[in-house]
Amino acid sequence: MLGVTRVEGRSRDGRDGLQGVFAGRRFAPDRPPEPGRRGLPSSLTDVGVAASPGTVLSAPDAVGYDGAVRVGGGPMSVVGGPRTLGALYAGIDLGGTNIAGVMADADGLVRAEANEPTRSEEGPDGVLTRIARMIDALAGEAGARPSAVGVPGLVDLERGRTRFLPNFPTQWRDVPVRDALAPRAGCEVHLLNDARAATLGELTYGHGRGSGTMVFFSVGTGVGGGVAIDGRLRLGPLGAAGELGHQTIVPDGPLCGCGNRGCLEALASGPALAAEGVRLVLSGQAPRLRETVGGDLAAVTPGTMAEAAAAGDAAVRAAIDRVAAYLGVGAANMVVALHPDLVVFGGGVAELGDLLLDGVRAEVRRRVGMLPAGSVRIDRSLLGARAGVLGAVALAAAGGLRPAPPARPM
Ligand SMILES: [Zn+2]
Image (cartoon, rainbow, N blue to C red):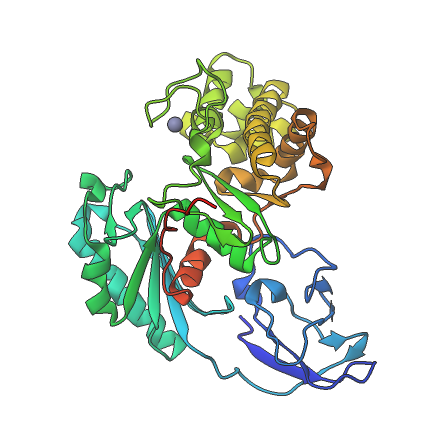
């Protein structure tokens, strides 16, 4: 890890005081940033800093950077150690298997991070105690206590209680997470639905920066989502707006966990894709996949299916294409409803990258005739697995989000 370095310099056109803050590799998301965007490295040995004086670049701007710093083609001098930080915020991602935590500033610069097993069998009290200890450890590493903590999960926004965590024993029904954690963390605690938190992360630190309207699909064990309109996360009166995985795609399709049939989640989640992979192995239509997993059906995942498709399993490739088409239908519905400038796919299944997204893009172009669908950018999350935890940081830095009050008639 390179840590955080402040740089200053003079550009070729003589502007003084350009500066940027660069974080080391440790903070890199799963792929390099795209060249050409403001402040992004155009290659690993060249950073084009377009920041104005006083502007700091957020961590995702500087990912993977490990070379000489240049402004406008001229070298910059590195003039300092770690910059003086403003307030720090803790983001905690409470998953069924792991608890991930980061300590970062409001620009998304990560100062410390931690990961440990959830051990949900210990119940809410044990898990919350370990979260509090994780916050202590993060504060020790970062050298400051957090000003606020953000926690993604399915929650009652007003009361700061968990409503339902399906992956946990007893499902954490009505656990007062906010009130239990705040005294132990020594600061305010804010809760937000996990997919909405990931949307907020992408909106604040990822592709969504500068975007007006963004639609975010989180495709993993389930299909979650979020919608940002005019740069603001749309929560609805209950914080439930953005359940994009529960739009009906096939009226008589498979039963969904929500009780409806043919939801996008029932057709295009990781388990839905893997189930089709298992069926193809068992029916002898996926010899490469059988080989890839060594006959172990539990190892059939979107990842191993992508390998098998690349190795020549046409039926597996068709299954991935079908999931891409379903996701494309869901995205097309959102595009005609909202005309976003950006549709982002996060979650484990989105790790398939263009193998999946090319099909999504084609389906959106095929189905959207009412507006120029080609102008809607469809991309994979810039933050990857960190979208949720950085969204929690953004939530904490914002002092929490409240559902919008009902609009008055014009
Ligand atoms: Zn559903």
